[in-house]
Each structure stands twice: as C-alpha cells, then as structure tokens.
Length: 243
Image (cartoon, rainbow, N blue to C red; front, side, top):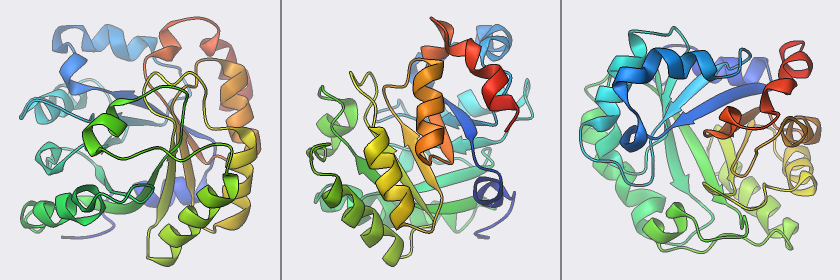
C-alpha cells in the first residue's frame, strides 16, 4: 500500500478553494450518469462517493460507471469498511473524532486493513468532526454519537487539534446531510487558524453565498450533495473558478 499514489492529498494542500460533489451510491442511477455530470458546477474539482449506509457492491459499481464518463478524481467517503474499492483514486480514512464510539474511532479502520494492504490506493487519514446542523443526521443515527454544539467552538477547535496531533492529514467539519444550518463561519475560521492541515467543510451548504462564506472563512474544500441542482448555486461559478 502506498499512502500517496495519485496526488489527491497534494492537490488539497496546494490549491485551496476546491469543490467536491458528494454522491450517495444508493441513490445513484447509472443510466443518467452523463446528464448528472453535466449538471454539476463547472468548477467542481473532486467527486466523493459514499454514505452512512450503502448496500454492498454499490459503491464500486457507482465508481466504475463514473470512471467511464469523467476524469475528475474520485474519493471514497466511507460509512464503513465495506465501501472500500480499488477503483477509486483515493480514500478518506475517516475517524469520527467528535464521538466516543470505538467502532468509528478505530474498529472500522482495523477491519479495513486487510483490504487496503492489497490495494494501490491513496489513503488519507482524516479527522471527522460531526457538528450540530439543527437536525438529526444519518451519521448521528448510525454512529450513535452526538454532534458537537456550534455554541462551543472552543471544543471543536480542541478536537480538531487533537486530530492533527494524532497524525490526521485532513480535518473534516460535517454538519450532516440535510442540515438546516451549515458549519458557522466563526467555527471554520477558528479551526483554520488553529490547525496547520487542510480543512474540509460540508453539510447544509445550498447557495453560492454559503459556499463563498465557507471559503472566505478558511475552508480549503467544500463538499455539497445535490444542492447544486436547485436555486442559485450555479451563480458561484465566476467567484470560485477564478481562485
């Protein structure tokens, strides 16, 4: 196994203001992949594939189909070790450091080792922090952990630093799928100022203004789901593609 194969980590470190579109394999329809890819913002830099719970084999099938239509880097965003496939370009090796459930702090990671040892896949250790987005999300239900309160940014900062000190290469602040409110600019800025590793932010971002605010606060990469299909998200192209 090589920890750096495709340079995905370097692209996150060196460029900043990247945009990843998150695809849930269980909701992905292979027969509309071409039209789907035409809808995503033109300044998209990466595709994330994965979900909290995904039927076995669907992640690999989804990535295989996407590879036929796009050259964008595809990164696995796994809910568990069964979603790992060598067809991807990289894997976010997530540890849910905001929770205290050993299953998602280390056990899923241990179960992934046998597969990863036989894959030439870029593995990126990532500290995953679930932040309260105003509603219960799938990550909360599956992991049986509570999100961190946005009213206590200092605790989120300390958790992010603990992730960096323990060797994580990325910090991912997640408000959860369908969040009523995204991670606040205050929290993004505080974490960015504290850590020296790249920062990913996702959950609840539905407009160009929210996207630009996340970048301005310090996010190196923003992750969106299907929000780009509605509203004014496309109007962010001019601001984001110039960076």
